Image: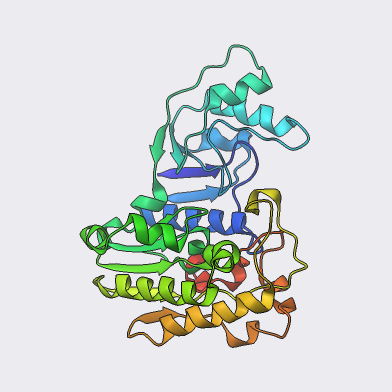
Length: 310
């Protein structure tokens, strides 16, 4: 199989400086592993798509089905891509989320185009299924994914919500080995709004450890240090209109408590470098992705070397 991995709206991410780039790197690695002896070329120009027998459409970490936000309006490349998609003679797969060619063309308004039905591939959830290994968490889970694992992540998923909606039996039924990564969202938005933040943190992470002890083979991931309060967060990352609750010092005290509970349990943990922590959190400003966000740059991910194949 010779496959072209493309995005209709932009480009498949390949940078080590943004969460979107990391998403693209993971998708690329998964697809190359699945095709084995096949070829996966990334961001192939539309005029070359017909040189391939399979088209893999991957719109990225922030794509919402039915939404075609094109900054600055449609560009010539978008017209070329939609015409190439209509003319493509091979198989088409949508990676993780469907892309509606017809819906996109309603914006472009190119007449007389018809499109073949594509197939949805839940690549992140299906990858590594045979090995029964998984990374489960919120959007931060991408930073601890490694080849051979399923990736089950939900942006905005809190540790509190996870513990209330899942049971160890459900996870053990699906997987023999899991990495769980939750808690950064709770620390940023929720714990400091509790009547007794310290007690709430102790209770939440003790429950987390007790839950994890019932799993067959589990690794917990430490929370990342709290960044300097000057970092701006995009509107989509706010909660109740705020980028965080509590001061950095208050949240760092809860951060230390949460990590201590995980690290002093009898469970395996993934811990972040100690030198990421400084007096005011300014170090983290460069460790987080270049865009105003709360995620690590992929170059700081735990298994980035394995993802890149080095």
